[in-house]
Length: 284
Image (cartoon, rainbow, N blue to C red; front, side, top):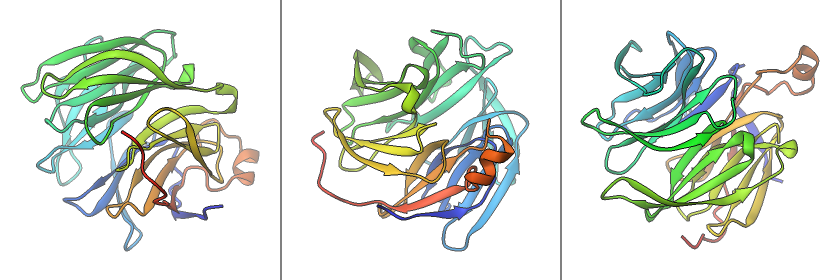
């Protein structure tokens, strides 16, 4: 069994969206309901925490190192002091919905989801926000739109609907920024865990973090279970690889856990770290 260590006992309400910032040499992550944006230095254990003005669905970094975050239904730029400035608002914005998870593609387009906080079936949207500020509705009908990423060759796009227990794959046209041929890539019984954050490793393996499942699944590019990483918390949310690809950082949540639960699983809300094995390569 891979040893799991607390990198930072953050006690986050809903830790989410870790990404490695090469320009800062830090791991960026958010506490969605804190609400805070955080910059963690694994070398020193130092964590800078910036309060945000509303629920933070994601943090992303563009090619020039600028920080972008989703706050409520707004996309904001975050400066070096942690101040947020709105520059876009999602289509279909209204009270009770918010942005949830996002990632830049290699052409600098931001892909992001909108979710209904009441988790109304079929209410979620997937958007593409282009560098010129134009929004595109790329797909819809999700219940809890979540983790997204691309295969290493850029030809496949993966997207999660947590409440349906499904991960979808699409053919991705990088030149056009277009999705085609949506299909179910992986499906699971949500009574055993809900697929949440998603990451594709450099070899094409898909990592799906299981909220209420206390684990991360590693899937092959053809959708088979390759490995399971068990975790000491019931509600992990998302993960990111270190620059060398040898460690995995995992955000977790205390949301919805009782005091008795927290006494039993005290690392809930912590940022966890585990060695990531480089065992074989995926096919895609």
